[in-house]
Image: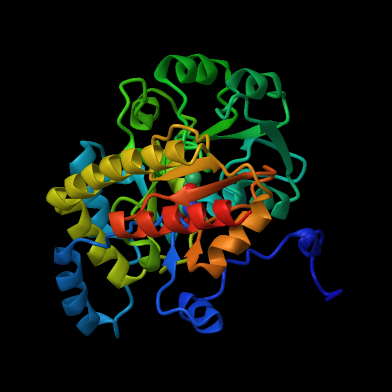
Length: 361
Ligand code: PMP
């Protein structure tokens, strides 16, 4: 419509796939395996499910707009102050709130590509300028990113581990990079996959928050905690930064079921440990199978693997879809796609479909 403001019509609509039941019906399949959005393949903790059943009796009340219990639970968990925590309707919403609170028209936002695809449109929405810096060796190119810092730079996004490559930047590199960022520029450390990382080089973003006034860490309950459908994530930063995010927040942005589920999910460390172990085992299974099929992959620190199918990625996607397995392409790589690490059963179906496709060729 011509009624739209500014450059709104230039923004692409985020179009996820059709509902899985619909895909299933269209393909005439009894089961479709979705390994496309880096969800937790096992599900939420059984204790969370119990809490949700009871929480349903309270849905006629507005949620606690301040997220008191969850912010206090997170503060205790990390040994920080509740005033350092901001809750969002998924960390997605916080990426938007960061744009709203910190980007003026003409400001620059430095970001890696490919990476989480929402940084760019949300910067453009504010008439800010996305400065996209290609990865080098499938890893964030912090040197190239540092070279793009200038007096107009207001935001820098570091996705660690990076989606869709699963690679990390190490502590020393990040120390050096953050040392180069002026204090008038906000560094966003997107740690959506923090809980999966099993690497001594991986820096804990909260350390930078403790040391610096211009760092914000994003984490989520969507991945390791299995609450993607409830939409809940959080930011950790100095209270002055949290205050800015609170000012642009809708009064009841995080619903009551999500808040209660997150408190319970955080408390169930056994479930987290089980998911972490499963992810480790299944990662090894997929590494072995991709190697057997002769397909290179990028070693990952997260719950997904970027691999090279050696064929047009759109063709691979369609062929797997017809066989009832949904993965994700469209990252700008001609032949590479991302698969979420699932359960053994799901991973087997993925490998079987991939193998059938390769043979058919
Ligand atoms: N950041 C990254 C790097 C992600 O991969 C995702 C989810 N795909 C998000 C943020 C958003 O997650 P959510 O809004 O579900 O918390």
